Amino acid sequence: MNKTNPELLAAYWTLAGDVYPGAPTEVSSFSLQERAAAASKAGYTGMGIVHADLMANAAKMGFPGIKAVLADNGIKHVEVEFLSDWFVDPADPRRKVSDQVRRELFEAAAALGARNFKISPALFEETPPDVPLLQHEFARLCEEARQVGTDIVMEMMPFTNVKTIDTAMAIIAGADQSNGGLLLDIWHLERGGMHCSEISKIPARFLKAIELDDANKEVVGTLFEDTRFSRQLCGEGSFDLAGFIKAVLAAGFNAPYYGVEIISETFRKLPLEVMARTSYESTMRQFKNLSI
Image (cartoon, rainbow, N blue to C red; front, side):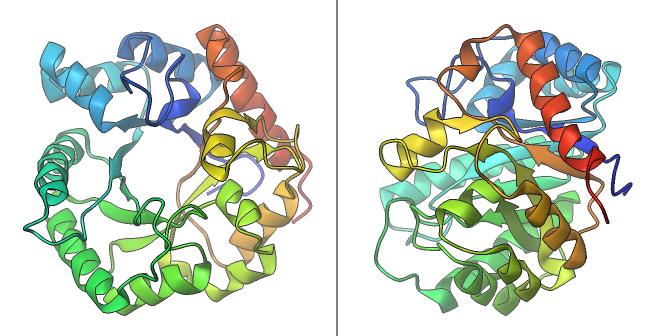
């Protein structure tokens, strides 16, 4: 990985248009072809796709069709997301839904050669996590993922019961899977009240994915509202992006790309080419001025 001129992946919401996590539909308002072309033109070499959009496009063109669209536009890095409730009791109705999403995301990951398969801890849950259970279920996911050549990356978030690096690493390091690790988004680190120095706690082999974005100094609404509606382009908010990037590099992060995840009520209504260009260029600026 070139430390000052890295490849970037447009996380799904960055180019999805006027939709957002938890919206009535999470299917993009733009076609996959439009998004892939805009991403490529801006300079992105990777794209993330959420379950709903994957299945909508698979219904139209099949996974081979999706793969062809991405390849034709020079998109070589792919991420699939987002699996929740993978840890709940098999008798729980939520697990039945989760297992269906799980099967479909694994099918997509295999067909598209996805590098990462993103998963979530328990959303809006304040009860401390059952770490041994999560270690066991995380290991099971990784075993399945190994069969299709993808990594399982868990995203710690301050509105889940895995809010900290310490808790996340208790699960991931406890499971100790070669293809299992942490997805670290600067938004979740900053809003979780953690300092960049804590990144040194993560062994390099478990630091699988990084996402970049920015935000106001003050939280706008609830944490969940802030993350879905008020993120900003890199360099336009209050986050210490230079410190974060230096810390992940010092910790040994060496994946082939960084993710860019801009989720904003105003940004998502811009023309697609503007979203692609501004998100790419503003993120690349963070590396151009980096003294390493």
